[in-house]
Length: 390
Image (cartoon, rainbow, N blue to C red; front, side, top):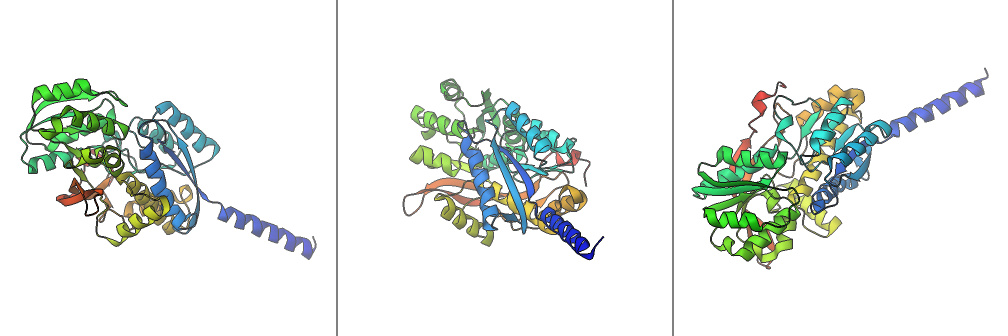
């Protein structure tokens, strides 16, 4: 074996190793980009990709390949996409899921494959308690939390009874459970609607008959837009106010319904007016990149990417090859969240603060959500006590 051959062989091996080292970490994003709720997934995707683009195609200094596909809000689609991502594309991180009818399909498949499931939105109670998993992380919230804060805000506003409604699927059930967990008043009406429902005449008639002090609903995306328009047209908003969570009164909904949104109270873990450096940079960067104000969903996509970036930086780009290290880095959550203080509880769900918001017009006449004060600090979900993780 000549010295030239040995040098050439060594050079080839070195090039192969270098090429392998440069292979990007594959991230599968299964999200909802179509249907009346399609903008939710679009906002999560755009927030996530803003963080990737800020690093020139990297997260934490590590090259990443983000593969995005639309589940159409159908569990069957989510299953097919997940199978392809995991088996063919060998993704190591799965993210993007918006709806809690998709999560119970995609999450178990991901975890069984040994990959990491990092949710920017949906976080059904199923995975927060006894069925928690060391490779499952929820960045946004646990579903109930959103609506627990609306119940607490309703108490603070002095309401004594409420009519509540939500879609008939896991997140809707979590929503009403969460609201009732902390609302101290009486529930004078409770109903479930079809996911994707457009006509609310029957429900509005029920509200009119029940004569509650207020109405709470969890109707994300196009459902929230349709309900608010019909509610205002019925005349009930003048006498029976709404107290909802942020997903039922985000910036896209405000833009779609215009002045109809003025005065609606809602609760959130994030707002565009949060006065911290990370949030100011995010809001400005999002507006520059996309020419619009970000929603809470965009903030969650961005924070999810930043979390992944912190873990990739800590492990030098290793994910499943150093699962213990990557998991520990995720748990540490060593990044500047746009919502402010952020940490994970024992069940890998957020422990975070929540604020009240009200829709108003700013000095230029634009609709905004103005923060009205802290509802809770360092709030944890009710299921964490049942999770065996430490």
